[in-house]
Length: 96
Image (cartoon, rainbow, N blue to C red; front, side, top):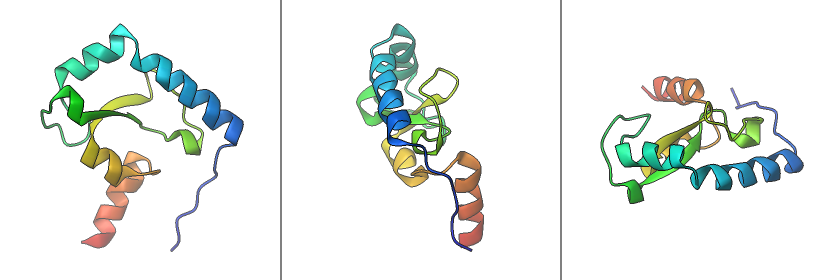
């Protein structure tokens, strides 16, 4: 079965990416990075090895808000791609 999802419009994506840039400058985000723990694999990393991930991807209509962004290691963020965490888990189960 092919993946199916509705893509957000370019105006939404542009707006949310700008919000994400602003959120990265916040004290809240710096504190999250300082903890150094990936949301997905729960391993500890240097802040320079962590990225901002949107749990519900912006391309899928997600927002750049504190409730939708998490700290993720580069590997987990890359593996997640445009999927939700549930879709990522389902894809992993399919591969087994």
